[in-house]
Length: 361
Image (cartoon, rainbow, N blue to C red):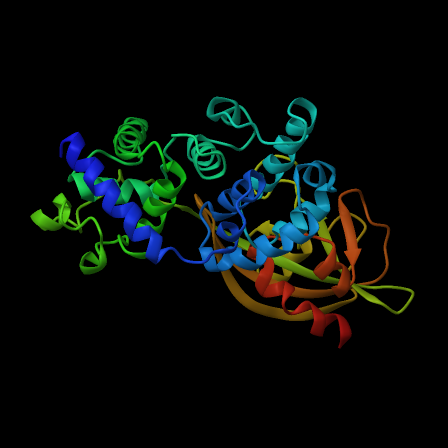
């Protein structure tokens, strides 16, 4: 496609967006802060899942200064269930920089946005174009799928060369008088019409007259992605350890993970790599020094959780413990405290759901 064809396609796309844009909450009131938070939340997360998180986040942390001041544990609790918790930590790091260097406001400058923790080319482009009207494309996986099919281009979208190439294509298409509308239109098309896995709704697409993949029957082939390495599988045993307090209140034992690595700094149910042990032996190995077992409550349902590079296959055991002195890094929490205060990763959600009943039986 030549540049004139790309620009004609862009004009059709922006017209289509005017009547097909979904009324998403972050589009109803556009501010740099709301665009930033929504785009970070939407990374690797479905829109419908983000809606309630975004609403709650805006209620509790309405601006940059509030974000810079929020306690880490509360921030992570608000993020609980969204995954990729480094995103939340980087939000706060960036907010602190914004308060220190930019008066608590996101700068209307693409290059300066790129210097902030957790903000890459896509997010910087979205903030610059949608919030400030700067002529910068916002190119993510959905957008590259649209552009690869539109142009019939087999460049690997996961490669750095591919990202630069499709950024350049989007830059050529971008109308300088409505960059935010164009960027959102490309996002919308990729999310609702030009769907992945060879299932685009070509009959509903405003770009169908120009689309090379549709013309050549290549929608299943494009975009091209290099094969990823297979995920590593870990067999883990989770210990749901109930501490029977002297005050008569049952609490569940929680452990804080290391500050680096997978699920860094989050609270978890004690767990351990299973090394051929039965579930009771493995669960006991997951307990901290000083803990003893009052009663074995038996096995709990198995569960599985998929991370980007690792897949956990979990068995679980319910153990009841007498009171003991908790070592550093451990807490004993009530069901209300788990629900309101301590952020537990989604991996432990199947067992967290059992806690209200276990702790009151």
